[in-house]
Length: 168
Figure (tube, one colour):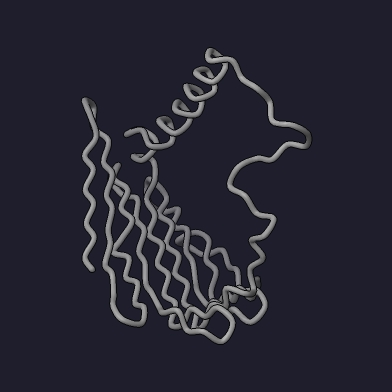
């Protein structure tokens, strides 16, 4: 990861950033505008090519792994663990937490490869603003077709608004 970092009148800025993993290279920029409340984060990345072979997922897991045999939980322990996890997610997605965020992230990839095979290309936009989280539009183009997706999440005092759209 390389880039030109500067502190300016608007806040913190990274220009001409470059992220390289193997043959996969993404160029971009970012700004954390501290002159507004809440501070606004804007980041964009563009990659001509992402080679999936550059990323070793064989030992990766989204879950914590522990050595030894799996731990057996009682029903009460499992409920308590699920409740704690639910409370964490609810706190992250609460109106208060989302209301303190203002962010826009964009990503564009011109070619996704697996070995010599071209899998496609895509674009995505993610935004958190005014207490609403939006993921999309996400555009995925593969040989034989395209998909356009979006997901929005807006918590309210007495419920949640969720909108999802997929077009193929």
